[in-house]
Amino acid sequence: MSPAGGEEAKPQRELIHAPALRKSSSGRDTADRRLAWILLSPAIAILATLTVYPALWVLWLALQYRIPVFGISRWAGLDHFAFLAVDTRFWNAAWVTGLFTVASVALEGALGLAVAVALRGQRGGRRTALALLLLAWALPSVVTAKMFEWLYHPAGGLVNFLLGGRAINWLGDPDLALPSLILADVWRATPFVALLCYARLLTIAPELYEAARVDGAAGLQAFARITWPLVRPILLVTLLFRTLDALRAFDIMFVLTGGGPAGSTESLTVYAYRALFQTLQVGFGSAIGVVVFAVVMVVAAAYLRLIGRQEGTA
Image (cartoon, rainbow, N blue to C red):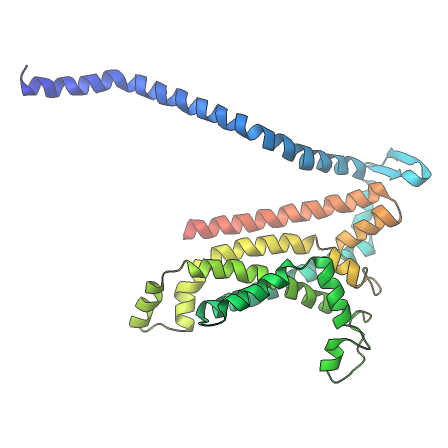
Protein backbone atom coordinates (compact mmCIF):
# COMPACT_ATOMS: atom_id res chain seq x y z
CA MET A 1 0.00 0.00 0.00
CA SER A 2 1.33 3.42 -0.92
CA PRO A 3 2.01 6.07 1.73
CA ALA A 4 -0.82 8.12 0.30
CA GLY A 5 -3.24 5.23 0.76
CA GLY A 6 -2.12 4.85 4.37
CA GLU A 7 -2.76 8.53 5.01
CA GLU A 8 -6.28 8.18 3.57
CA ALA A 9 -7.07 5.11 5.67
CA LYS A 10 -6.06 6.77 8.92
CA PRO A 11 -8.81 9.45 8.94
CA GLN A 12 -11.34 6.75 8.02
CA ARG A 13 -10.36 4.67 11.03
CA GLU A 14 -10.63 7.76 13.26
CA LEU A 15 -14.12 8.48 11.93
CA ILE A 16 -15.17 4.88 12.53
CA HIS A 17 -13.93 4.84 16.15
CA ALA A 18 -14.99 8.41 17.12
CA PRO A 19 -18.61 7.56 18.08
CA ALA A 20 -17.41 4.61 20.12
CA LEU A 21 -14.90 6.81 21.93
CA ARG A 22 -17.54 9.43 22.67
CA LYS A 23 -19.92 6.75 23.94
CA SER A 24 -17.22 5.27 26.14
CA SER A 25 -16.31 8.72 27.53
CA SER A 26 -19.99 9.48 28.23
CA GLY A 27 -20.42 6.19 30.04
CA ARG A 28 -17.30 6.83 32.11
CA ASP A 29 -18.56 10.30 33.06
CA THR A 30 -21.90 8.84 34.14
CA ALA A 31 -20.15 6.22 36.25
CA ASP A 32 -17.94 8.90 37.84
CA ARG A 33 -20.95 11.04 38.71
CA ARG A 34 -22.74 8.05 40.18
CA LEU A 35 -19.69 7.20 42.28
CA ALA A 36 -19.40 10.83 43.42
CA TRP A 37 -23.02 10.85 44.61
CA ILE A 38 -22.50 7.54 46.40
CA LEU A 39 -19.43 8.90 48.21
CA LEU A 40 -21.16 12.19 49.06
CA SER A 41 -24.41 10.62 50.25
CA PRO A 42 -23.31 10.05 53.89
CA ALA A 43 -22.19 13.68 54.25
CA ILE A 44 -25.36 14.92 52.54
CA ALA A 45 -27.50 12.80 54.86
CA ILE A 46 -25.70 14.13 57.94
CA LEU A 47 -26.01 17.74 56.76
CA ALA A 48 -29.69 17.25 55.97
CA THR A 49 -30.26 15.81 59.44
CA LEU A 50 -28.35 18.56 61.24
CA THR A 51 -29.42 21.59 59.17
CA VAL A 52 -32.36 21.04 56.83
CA TYR A 53 -34.62 19.21 59.30
CA PRO A 54 -34.09 21.70 62.19
CA ALA A 55 -34.63 24.63 59.79
CA LEU A 56 -37.91 23.19 58.57
CA TRP A 57 -38.96 22.45 62.16
CA VAL A 58 -38.26 26.06 63.23
CA LEU A 59 -40.27 27.31 60.26
CA TRP A 60 -43.15 25.04 61.32
CA LEU A 61 -42.98 26.34 64.89
CA ALA A 62 -43.01 29.93 63.61
CA LEU A 63 -46.46 29.28 62.15
CA GLN A 64 -47.95 28.26 65.50
CA TYR A 65 -48.92 29.69 68.87
CA ARG A 66 -46.93 27.43 71.16
CA ILE A 67 -46.28 28.09 74.86
CA PRO A 68 -45.51 24.69 76.43
CA VAL A 69 -45.71 25.85 80.05
CA PHE A 70 -49.40 26.72 79.56
CA GLY A 71 -50.14 23.86 77.19
CA ILE A 72 -50.94 26.25 74.32
CA SER A 73 -50.43 24.84 70.85
CA ARG A 74 -52.53 26.04 67.93
CA TRP A 75 -52.14 27.27 64.40
CA ALA A 76 -51.08 30.90 63.98
CA GLY A 77 -50.27 31.18 60.31
CA LEU A 78 -48.48 34.44 59.56
CA ASP A 79 -49.72 36.21 62.71
CA HIS A 80 -46.26 36.31 64.30
CA PHE A 81 -44.72 37.89 61.22
CA ALA A 82 -47.56 40.39 60.98
CA PHE A 83 -46.94 41.38 64.60
CA LEU A 84 -43.19 41.74 63.97
CA ALA A 85 -43.94 44.15 61.12
CA VAL A 86 -45.43 46.64 63.60
CA ASP A 87 -43.42 45.70 66.69
CA THR A 88 -41.27 48.66 67.79
CA ARG A 89 -39.07 46.39 69.88
CA PHE A 90 -38.34 44.23 66.84
CA TRP A 91 -37.40 47.23 64.70
CA ASN A 92 -35.19 48.57 67.47
CA ALA A 93 -33.45 45.18 67.63
CA ALA A 94 -33.09 45.21 63.82
CA TRP A 95 -31.54 48.70 63.98
CA VAL A 96 -29.12 47.62 66.71
CA THR A 97 -28.17 44.52 64.72
CA GLY A 98 -27.60 46.49 61.53
CA LEU A 99 -25.58 49.23 63.21
CA PHE A 100 -23.48 46.71 65.13
CA THR A 101 -22.82 44.71 61.95
CA VAL A 102 -21.90 47.63 59.71
CA ALA A 103 -19.68 49.39 62.25
CA SER A 104 -17.85 46.31 63.52
CA VAL A 105 -17.27 44.73 60.09
CA ALA A 106 -16.07 48.02 58.59
CA LEU A 107 -13.59 48.60 61.42
CA GLU A 108 -12.43 44.98 61.38
CA GLY A 109 -11.85 45.09 57.62
CA ALA A 110 -9.88 48.34 57.71
CA LEU A 111 -7.83 47.50 60.80
CA GLY A 112 -7.27 43.88 59.74
CA LEU A 113 -5.91 44.91 56.34
CA ALA A 114 -3.72 47.58 57.95
CA VAL A 115 -2.30 45.06 60.43
CA ALA A 116 -1.66 42.56 57.63
CA VAL A 117 0.21 45.15 55.55
CA ALA A 118 2.25 46.17 58.61
CA LEU A 119 3.15 42.54 59.31
CA ARG A 120 4.13 42.05 55.67
CA GLY A 121 6.62 44.88 55.91
CA GLN A 122 7.88 43.98 59.37
CA ARG A 123 11.42 42.59 59.52
CA GLY A 124 11.72 41.49 63.14
CA GLY A 125 9.29 40.18 65.74
CA ARG A 126 6.87 38.84 63.17
CA ARG A 127 6.36 35.54 65.00
CA THR A 128 5.62 37.33 68.27
CA ALA A 129 3.07 39.57 66.57
CA LEU A 130 1.39 36.57 64.95
CA ALA A 131 1.27 34.76 68.29
CA LEU A 132 -0.43 37.76 69.93
CA LEU A 133 -2.96 37.92 67.09
CA LEU A 134 -3.70 34.23 67.44
CA LEU A 135 -4.09 34.61 71.21
CA ALA A 136 -6.72 37.33 70.81
CA TRP A 137 -8.64 35.31 68.22
CA ALA A 138 -8.35 32.01 70.12
CA LEU A 139 -10.00 33.35 73.27
CA PRO A 140 -13.64 32.22 73.59
CA SER A 141 -16.17 34.98 73.09
CA VAL A 142 -17.47 34.66 76.64
CA VAL A 143 -13.94 35.06 78.04
CA THR A 144 -13.42 38.13 75.86
CA ALA A 145 -16.73 39.57 77.06
CA LYS A 146 -15.84 39.06 80.73
CA MET A 147 -12.43 40.62 80.15
CA PHE A 148 -14.01 43.73 78.65
CA GLU A 149 -16.53 43.81 81.46
CA TRP A 150 -13.60 44.27 83.84
CA LEU A 151 -11.92 46.78 81.52
CA TYR A 152 -15.12 48.86 81.34
CA HIS A 153 -15.84 48.72 85.08
CA PRO A 154 -16.87 52.23 86.24
CA ALA A 155 -14.79 52.19 89.43
CA GLY A 156 -11.81 49.88 88.87
CA GLY A 157 -11.66 49.42 85.11
CA LEU A 158 -8.46 49.98 83.19
CA VAL A 159 -10.18 52.15 80.57
CA ASN A 160 -11.35 54.71 83.13
CA PHE A 161 -7.95 54.57 84.84
CA LEU A 162 -6.21 55.46 81.57
CA LEU A 163 -8.68 58.32 81.12
CA GLY A 164 -7.60 59.90 84.40
CA GLY A 165 -9.81 58.06 86.84
CA ARG A 166 -13.12 59.17 85.42
CA ALA A 167 -16.16 57.17 86.55
CA ILE A 168 -17.68 56.55 83.12
CA ASN A 169 -20.34 53.84 83.05
CA TRP A 170 -19.53 52.42 79.61
CA LEU A 171 -22.01 49.56 79.73
CA GLY A 172 -24.73 51.36 81.72
CA ASP A 173 -25.08 54.44 79.52
CA PRO A 174 -27.46 53.90 76.56
CA ASP A 175 -25.30 56.19 74.42
CA LEU A 176 -22.05 54.36 75.19
CA ALA A 177 -23.13 50.73 75.55
CA LEU A 178 -23.35 49.84 71.86
CA PRO A 179 -20.07 51.55 70.87
CA SER A 180 -18.42 49.70 73.75
CA LEU A 181 -19.71 46.38 72.42
CA ILE A 182 -18.53 47.25 68.93
CA LEU A 183 -15.01 47.97 70.19
CA ALA A 184 -14.95 44.69 72.09
CA ASP A 185 -16.04 42.77 68.99
CA VAL A 186 -13.47 44.60 66.84
CA TRP A 187 -10.70 43.65 69.28
CA ARG A 188 -11.80 40.02 69.17
CA ALA A 189 -12.34 39.61 65.41
CA THR A 190 -9.72 41.88 63.81
CA PRO A 191 -7.01 39.18 64.13
CA PHE A 192 -9.14 36.85 61.99
CA VAL A 193 -9.25 39.38 59.16
CA ALA A 194 -5.57 40.26 59.60
CA LEU A 195 -4.37 36.66 59.47
CA LEU A 196 -6.28 35.83 56.29
CA CYS A 197 -5.15 39.01 54.55
CA TYR A 198 -1.58 38.42 55.72
CA ALA A 199 -1.64 34.90 54.29
CA ARG A 200 -2.72 36.35 50.93
CA LEU A 201 -0.02 39.02 51.03
CA LEU A 202 2.65 36.36 51.50
CA THR A 203 1.70 34.83 48.14
CA ILE A 204 2.32 38.09 46.23
CA ALA A 205 5.63 37.83 44.39
CA PRO A 206 8.20 40.42 45.56
CA GLU A 207 9.16 40.91 41.91
CA LEU A 208 5.90 42.79 41.39
CA TYR A 209 6.89 45.42 43.94
CA GLU A 210 10.42 45.60 42.54
CA ALA A 211 9.02 46.22 39.06
CA ALA A 212 6.71 48.87 40.49
CA ARG A 213 9.64 50.64 42.15
CA VAL A 214 11.53 50.61 38.87
CA ASP A 215 8.50 52.25 37.23
CA GLY A 216 8.42 54.85 39.99
CA ALA A 217 5.40 53.47 41.87
CA ALA A 218 5.91 53.03 45.61
CA GLY A 219 4.00 53.43 48.84
CA LEU A 220 0.33 54.21 48.23
CA GLN A 221 0.68 53.79 44.47
CA ALA A 222 2.07 50.26 44.89
CA PHE A 223 -0.68 49.47 47.36
CA ALA A 224 -3.42 50.75 45.04
CA ARG A 225 -2.08 49.04 41.90
CA ILE A 226 -0.68 45.78 43.30
CA THR A 227 -1.67 45.01 46.88
CA TRP A 228 -5.32 46.08 46.83
CA PRO A 229 -6.38 44.29 43.60
CA LEU A 230 -4.72 41.05 44.74
CA VAL A 231 -5.94 41.10 48.34
CA ARG A 232 -9.48 42.31 47.59
CA PRO A 233 -11.00 38.88 46.76
CA ILE A 234 -9.84 37.25 50.01
CA LEU A 235 -10.86 40.37 51.94
CA LEU A 236 -14.39 40.10 50.54
CA VAL A 237 -14.61 36.44 51.55
CA THR A 238 -13.33 37.31 55.03
CA LEU A 239 -15.84 40.12 55.41
CA LEU A 240 -18.58 37.73 54.30
CA PHE A 241 -17.81 35.43 57.23
CA ARG A 242 -17.53 38.34 59.63
CA THR A 243 -20.82 39.88 58.44
CA LEU A 244 -22.69 36.62 58.95
CA ASP A 245 -21.16 36.27 62.42
CA ALA A 246 -22.05 39.86 63.36
CA LEU A 247 -25.65 39.44 62.22
CA ARG A 248 -25.94 36.42 64.50
CA ALA A 249 -23.94 37.91 67.37
CA PHE A 250 -25.28 36.92 70.77
CA ASP A 251 -22.68 35.94 73.34
CA ILE A 252 -20.77 39.21 73.63
CA MET A 253 -24.01 41.22 73.94
CA PHE A 254 -25.68 38.85 76.34
CA VAL A 255 -22.67 38.62 78.67
CA LEU A 256 -21.78 42.32 78.71
CA THR A 257 -25.17 44.03 78.76
CA GLY A 258 -27.92 41.42 78.39
CA GLY A 259 -29.50 43.65 75.76
CA GLY A 260 -29.65 46.72 77.99
CA PRO A 261 -29.64 49.40 79.08
CA ALA A 262 -33.16 50.26 77.88
CA GLY A 263 -32.82 47.94 74.89
CA SER A 264 -29.92 49.93 73.42
CA THR A 265 -27.91 46.74 72.74
CA GLU A 266 -30.72 44.24 72.23
CA SER A 267 -30.05 42.54 68.90
CA LEU A 268 -32.39 40.23 67.01
CA THR A 269 -30.71 37.16 68.47
CA VAL A 270 -31.03 38.49 72.02
CA TYR A 271 -34.70 39.29 71.36
CA ALA A 272 -35.25 35.77 70.02
CA TYR A 273 -33.52 34.30 73.08
CA ARG A 274 -35.75 36.24 75.46
CA ALA A 275 -38.87 35.16 73.60
CA LEU A 276 -37.80 31.51 73.42
CA PHE A 277 -36.23 30.87 76.82
CA GLN A 278 -37.41 33.61 79.16
CA THR A 279 -41.05 34.03 78.17
CA LEU A 280 -41.25 30.53 76.59
CA GLN A 281 -43.05 31.81 73.48
CA VAL A 282 -41.68 29.11 71.23
CA GLY A 283 -43.67 30.10 68.16
CA PHE A 284 -42.92 33.81 68.41
CA GLY A 285 -39.24 33.23 69.13
CA SER A 286 -39.00 30.86 66.17
CA ALA A 287 -40.53 33.56 63.95
CA ILE A 288 -37.74 35.95 64.96
CA GLY A 289 -35.22 33.21 64.21
CA VAL A 290 -36.73 32.73 60.74
CA VAL A 291 -36.36 36.46 60.07
CA VAL A 292 -32.71 36.37 61.16
CA PHE A 293 -32.13 33.38 58.89
CA ALA A 294 -33.73 35.18 55.94
CA VAL A 295 -31.62 38.29 56.51
CA VAL A 296 -28.44 36.19 56.72
CA MET A 297 -29.30 34.40 53.48
CA VAL A 298 -30.00 37.67 51.63
CA VAL A 299 -26.75 39.22 52.84
CA ALA A 300 -24.79 36.08 51.94
CA ALA A 301 -26.32 36.04 48.45
CA ALA A 302 -25.38 39.71 47.96
CA TYR A 303 -21.80 39.04 49.05
CA LEU A 304 -21.49 36.00 46.78
CA ARG A 305 -22.83 37.98 43.84
CA LEU A 306 -20.29 40.73 44.52
CA ILE A 307 -17.49 38.18 44.80
CA GLY A 308 -18.57 36.56 41.54
CA ARG A 309 -18.62 39.95 39.84
CA GLN A 310 -15.10 40.68 41.10
CA GLU A 311 -13.86 37.36 39.76
CA GLY A 312 -15.55 38.03 36.41
CA THR A 313 -13.78 41.37 36.03
CA ALA A 314 -10.41 40.06 37.24
